[in-house]
Image (cartoon, rainbow, N blue to C red; front, side):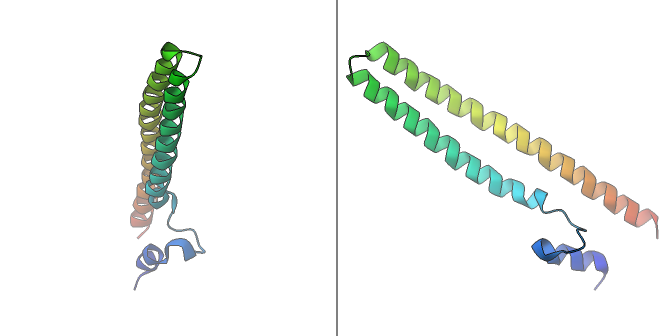
Length: 105
């Protein structure tokens, strides 16, 4: 088994840092971000619905619900774009390292 194949299988225990974990961690970060954004959106929307029943009025409560939904969608899109850029940068680094490794042979 070559050193490159060993590094691919080592994952977290790769003490030589020949393979970056960041690319594989991006999907986990995406899932956590979706959970957090969804929870925040639901909580703020519920606050908006509650506000509709209080003395503050239906207009303010409706405004809070709309802002919650628009903010949730916008946060999801921006988070996805950011994580795609991070993944692309790490893949560029991985490909550059592979090119360097292949040209030294």
